[in-house]
Structure formats: C-alpha cells, structure tokens
Length: 141
Image 1 (tube, rainbow, N blue to C red):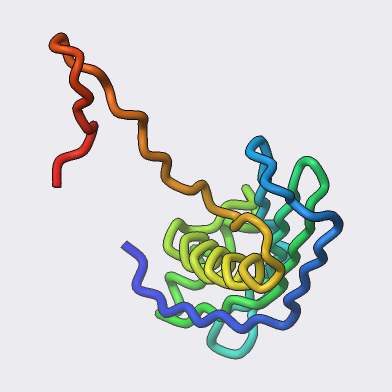
Image 2: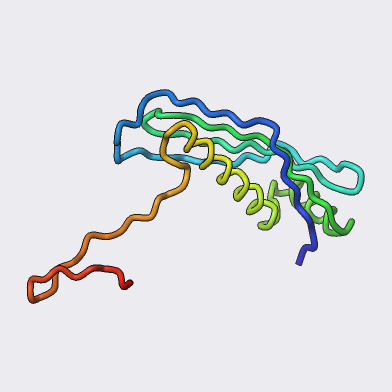
C-alpha cells in the first residue's frame, strides 16, 4: 500500500454558459479527466491534469486545470513514476483526489452559471400502487 500525501493546486477555472438549459430534462453530461504529465520535482511528483465537462445539447462547458503534488517515500514515488511512464496508470488514491476536488469545483461553478451540476442527481422513484389500490411510498421515513 502506498503511503503518499496529495495536495491539489488549481491554476485555471473556467465556465461558459452557451444557452439556457430551460428545464430540458434530457441533458447529457460528459466528464473527462486528462493527466497531461507527471514530473519529478525535488522530493515529490507533480501531476498536471485537466478536467473537462461537456453538455449535450451544448448548454455549457467547464474546464478546470491544476497540479497534484504527491509527496511520500522515495520508493512509492518511483513506483508511481514507473507505472505512469510504462502504462500511463496512476494509483487510485491520486486519481480519486483529483476527481473529488475537480467535481466539487465543477459543482460550484455550475451553480454560479445556473446550469445542471456535473454529477448525476438522485432520482426518487414514483410511488407504487398496492393490491388494495392505495399508493405506497417507495421510501421509509
């Protein structure tokens, strides 16, 4: 198991509202995290990334760029670097941290632009009818 510390520094946050969502219920949201490069710096690694959110229909676009600084034991950092260079694979804790920060910033930016957030919203199913014809809620409070 890797023993690493991860710090995220965002360098670019942008969002553009292209059209009004207008209550459209069939908006598809695509998110993508691209790792641009992994660079050794002093006793750490710097992982540059870009988080993009695209809407279909083209309601808006969001872009977040940043650098994840990874510190830890030298052998762990070497393992991360070799894995990235050979297979372009990063460890789950690093990707999860990048995703968490990016999605949180994306939700805040989407709220500011009054567009749907880049997360799937939970849906509450319609109540089902019982044999007696009464409506029974699908949740229990």
